[in-house]
Length: 122
Image (cartoon, rainbow, N blue to C red; front, side, top):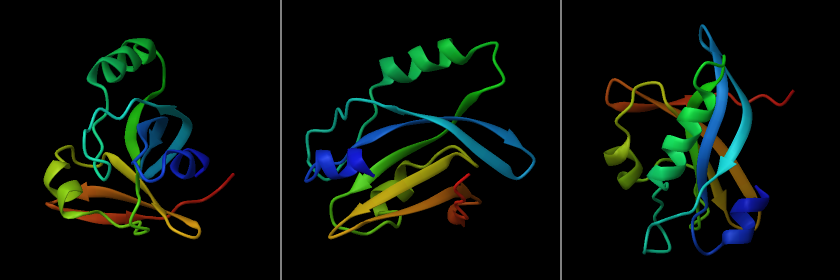
């Protein structure tokens, strides 16, 4: 949430490290990445950082379970661009809508649609 506020009016972005156990996905750590997108209301995760994290996690119980980004329009719902870019089934998309407050929501692409996820704090 702080990263989303600090990068406003640009979108922040990063990768989510975690573990899966059945239908439960536990986020262990967020990995901020550079946003390579030129437009302020878009995000593009640096592929070199993505590959580096994959290498770091190789051989561990952790994996990249999703990505996160912010929406400077205040809406924490998948945008048409998000829907077009979501290619990996069951990959978490955490979206921070930045307005007067930061609202978080999580989704996973499944069967061509984004399915909302319940977020619980430890």
